[in-house]
Length: 115
Image 1 (cartoon, one colour):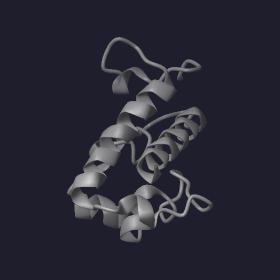
Image 2: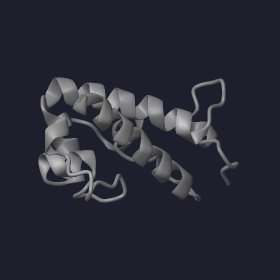
Image 3: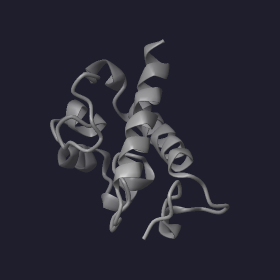
């Protein structure tokens, strides 16, 4: 079971970080990939509908039609998607904290590109 404020050991690169720190780093990596592979991706995001927990309203869903189509277009699997912050890591008992952290991290990355 996950300790409050920390992602599970499988996704921690030492030293241990909070879920928010992990999410911020992962979303920054994912946003950089999107900047390279899908220029203008941020303009396609409807923030009112945006949710990392939705296959159609997440970053990949809003840019490629679905989370799965985005993974295919980027040539990444589930592990790569988690490393890039497009989804939380597999096998989590308590995803709520990671989902909230990822949602906030992506909103931050989108906001930085809107300025």
